[in-house]
Length: 393
Ligand SMILES: Cc1ncc(COP(=O)(O)O)c(C=O)c1O
Image (cartoon, rainbow, N blue to C red; front, side, top):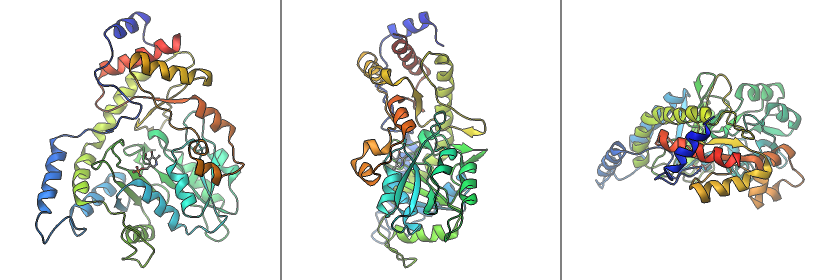
């Protein structure tokens, strides 16, 4: 833990120049390379015969590079991750009463996709250490109506995929067979599980390239990765009005300018993750053994992308701590996430009677301390000093 003298001297130097947020508005870093890639793609589109059309090479090139990076057979670029989650649920062709298990401590996107496709959301508890969907709890919630297990790789760490896949295989659906695992990796691009990047596991994985995410394609964007030819054909069809596969569809295409920038960002992704991990490692030492502060967990064989640096503190302290961090030290922590049924009235109405005690408790204890690949060691030290100061008083 950072010593009292060092802490005081760091804090005496004053606030950081950047006002750090728990989830900074730009999650990666942009440079001239992205500007040049975007400019070249725009120039290439200025001919009347070319335009920004979907027949460009940029999109398939980005898809191929992304599929290679994650080790999946297919990658399908989208305008954002949300439609990818919707496509995943629509692919299941859910019938009334069909159930999909999602973690309760979660962003609203994946449960909304379940409800939007006509499925019944079944909330699952998360492991209080990893904050990932807990296989032991999932097992209790499986039923003959379960159509998918839908882990979210919360805050940049992988969910326990092998255990979840094994559960799905051990409890096949009476009509559809093994229950598929569908991953929401919106916050975990660049993370890996048992030595392999996320994206080649389960039936399919959905990534986000929204402005806040580990890499971004001009503010919005997403990708589905899968090893299933059938899933890939379906998603490509839905992505453009069902034209290529005779399915229902709408328009969820990525632009060629986004794809051109995506290739540049992808080439930098490992360096972004390394920078996040460097800050996290320093921080883990500076904050080690602070009473009443639980630090993020990285189990062996997992590589956390540290999209968020997620901590727990006793529930009677959390809100006052965040207020003081902001008002006195100019550091804005984030609560990510309280249970979905608490943050979205539609989700509450869609899951009557489902209340999860552990998720409720974690929702009152969780908070995320700002982290970013461009954060200096000095800013990190200031943030840690401020946090210890607040925790100790
Ligand atoms: C866990 C999670 N899932 C899905 C999404 C949706 O991503 P997008 O904004 O690309 O649609 C987000 C974005 O904030 C997210 O954090």
